[in-house]
Amino acid sequence: MAYATQKLAEEKVFKDPVHRYIHVQDQVIWDLIATKEFQRLRRIRQLGTTYLVFHGAEHSRFSHSLGVYEIVRRMVDDVFANRPEWNKRERLVALCAGLLHDLGHGPFSHAFEHVFDLDHEYFTRVIILGNTEVNEVLRRVSKDFPKKVSEVIEKTYHNKQVVSLISSQIDADRMDYLQRDAYFTGVSYGHFDMERILRVMRPQPDQIVIKSTGMHAIEDYIMSRYQMYWQVYFHPVSRSAEVILRKTLERAKELYHAGYTFKHDIAHFHSFFENDVQLDAYIAMDESIILAYFQFWMSEEDAILSDLSQRFLNRKLFKFVEVDPSKDWEKLIRLEKLFDQAGIDPNYYLVMDSSSDLPYDFYRPGEEGERLPIYLQMPNKELSELSRSSDIVDAISGKRRTDHKLYYPKDLLHEEHPLHEQIIEIMHA
Amino acid sequence: MLQDHAKIVQFVSLAGEVTGRKKLQKMIFIAKKMDFAFQEKYNFHIYGPYSEELTVRMEELCNLGFMTERKEDKGSYVQYCYAPTEKGREFATIVEPQNTRLSEIVQQMNGKSSRFLELVATLLYFDDLQPEEQIEKVNVVKAKLHFTTEEFEAAFQFIQQLQS
Image (cartoon, rainbow over all chains, first blue to last red; front, side, top):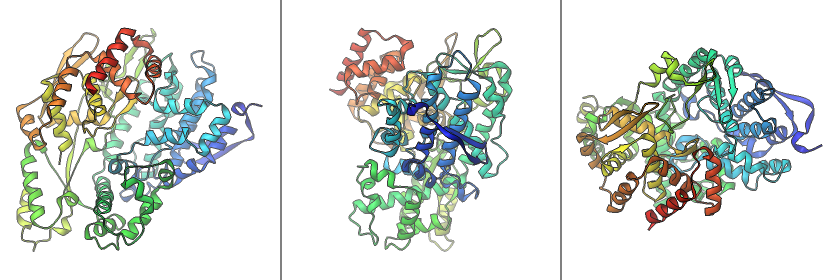
């Protein structure tokens, strides 16, 4: 029997708190899960620093990836199976892309990528196409199969239906992470009727559209996205932890380039500091490594590196004030100078964080050719962009909400400090 | 602080006004590909390279009053035009003025249609491929747009011109 269609002797299941069970029938999927590159995802949290605010948020990219796979499986095996618009030969590539879509995430994804100018989508492709166990499994399907899977994830695959399942305004990725993140953070937002959404999805030649009777289920999903962003993903305290994480890594990098001698060898970071990251070094880097280094760095001679590391590990986070840069940007420049005078390096201890630093795609209809919106399929088979039919979505998508916060270590600005009053006055003006 | 915001205001100032979000998206992507230091991260979307970060940053700049957004009703769709405000131009002075090369490139790009810039940006996205492969790839990912041989030639010529 061809490897591509080979089934396990008996279906395997993973118990999952969100989907109850993850069902695996294909040998290819079972083998991919067993690869070391996929197992590495167990050591990368799905929500980065959020566990420092919502202590339950310890779930990993491993469980999220299984969840995305399961949703895609339900779409292609249960919902689309008998629809003439769906090409059954795309089943395996869709399942593999769903499972592997996050393979290239680094530790604490956004902060890490920001400091080292990396792109997880690029590394996902490199892992799929490079000399890896994942590649070996995919090549057993066919020589060009790794490339196909990679193209789906890169969104350049010829069949846009398949791409839409994994990556669109309403896709398996978002449907899993919203529910999973809500479950593990313990918040009451993030819930929506996924079963209903799956039932009203309709494959079209170039995209997936939603039967108009499913509009209210979609509204719920859009609301969940909106609320999860402001309540969980962009939580100000979690952002504080991310600011510190970023600044710690930046400090280590700066010290490395200044010729500083670290007490502990920084072997894992060499290629990252040199901006020459090869596949092996990337795969070897995960959150357990980062946290181990932070432990070492707490006892470093460099006061900034030591301080930032212990702040992160011991959750001594920066405080924040809301700022309006349109009114305050001149004050911000003065503040930077005052911090400098006070001997507190503003490059590490005075940090502006804006909503664009963690862009999260709210639903926006946008302009023609900007992004593909969600289309409802009306009873006469015509397509209507979601916000034109839904007042709720129209209200959310038409409104912009942005946010700027200034993070600083309040504990370093103790009252006896000669510049304390001036700084506090500017901060709270 | 806010250096990346200021760079975007500076970029739009060089153009005077940019008509269309899609056009602005492609212009910044092309400038990045020409090695200008913009930090906005791009991924490939159904309509080519797209940066969510840039979209949110533009929203922030409009909310802050550094940029104006004008809506133009085109019948079946809406188009957005961007221009910096006086306050925005003043804010943009927090970063070093850009060199004349960027100014030239911005002018050249702004004179082109968004369809053409979409083609240029998509070709540049696949610039690790050979030209024939780039064309093949564009024809796969943008089959509906039916780019002509002349358009491909013009796009390659334009890229060469920008790189020279």
